[in-house]
Amino acid sequence: MSELSSTFVRLHARLAPVPFVPEVRLHQADEPIGLWELTEGEFSTDRPPPFWAFAWAGGQALARYVTDHPELVAGRRVLDLASGSGLVAIAAARAGAASVRAVEVDELAVAAVALNAEANGVRVDAEFGDILDGDAGDAEVVLAGDVFYSDAMARRVLRFLLRATRAGAPALVGDPGRAFLPRDRFDELAAYDVPVPEALESVRVKRTTVWRLRAGLPGAPG
Image 1 (cartoon, rainbow, N blue to C red):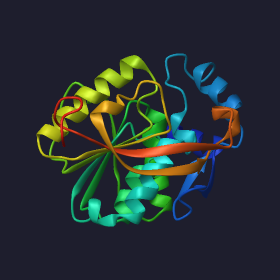
Image 2 (cartoon, one colour):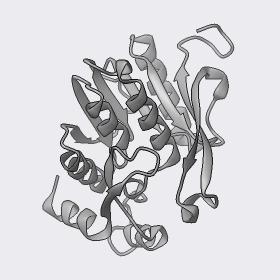
Image 3 (cartoon, helix red, strand yellow):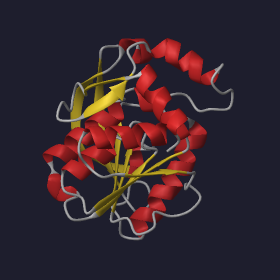
């Protein structure tokens, strides 16, 4: 985590409770559009959008589910894929995970995860890199919030999660109805009405589902 990235996160986001998971505090941006333009423009033209600066619906739902069902992760090694702010990773750490690895392709997100974990008094190993063409390592549970937002991303994520599931690590996803989620691959675990930033989602609340991936073919019993 570079000092420059940490300074940028502190400068452009303030620490506040997450609306649907108030047990967790995150560095969150007050004004989404301005930060989006800054990170895509002057700060770096090749940098990913600032997913780390907002509590997205999928992550909030998944973090709520983990918080309310700590037995899912307690004592287990957890991988949080495309971690963003680290919300889901932090929820897993708070729920008693043996270890939590949070992976991101954005250096600012890695900094945000580290800062947010520290603010919540938990340990999360924030890692920079794209692991989607590989495997989940020694993870015993894989979590992913709001990752099916594009066709290309969805295809890569699904293949990764299938490899993890077939290796014995259950994969849970939080999703607010994104178009590219292959629902026939998943079993529904819970659904919530999650408050979201209207500037990002054009609504104040999104119905959001927590899903568990099936290792078999579409439509096959789990």
